Image 1 (cartoon, rainbow, N blue to C red):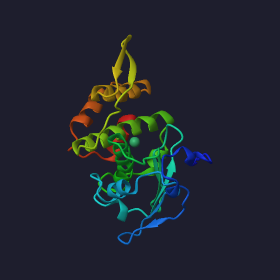
Image 2 (cartoon, protein in one colour):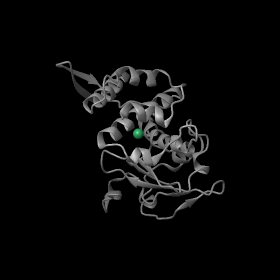
Image 3 (tube, helix red, strand yellow):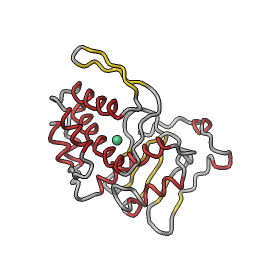
Length: 223
Ligand SMILES: [Zn+2]
């Protein structure tokens, strides 16, 4: 579902000349087509991320097409079909800040792992997970992607905001711009969705970005 709201392009800060053009861009160096009908993402950043992603050297040459849609809900960031036609759901990134760049690299990181034969992604197995298992799987996968992006200097926490946690009956309010809050958030989410003591797993993934994990390494702990 794309959930695109007609007229939403008006909220973009893009110059009038850039909005509303529906020309699929084609590059001479790859067969991949980028469909960004609303000009949601800065082209230069997108192309750099596709050609030089730290988790997969040349994503652009592996994808048939990439369609950019505006993200309207909190859930999916990226999808890909069996023909490697991918759809990225993202907020408008017109003048990219560090956080924007990180979010783009993060979402493409899911595609990078799916394409990497060493990761061993199996969509059918993922489809068999319950809703909670799926969210836990995604939580672990996100940490694994972020740990490696952090290693490459691309991870970026939100600049402001706070998160509240209740741990062993005590309430904590912590700033979002702290990596401990980020990790605690993941651990709390996993615990609330039924995983038993995920703390050491999450911190081990975060602290060992060099250690290559597979799809099964992330799937087994959530089942
Ligand atoms: Zn993600």
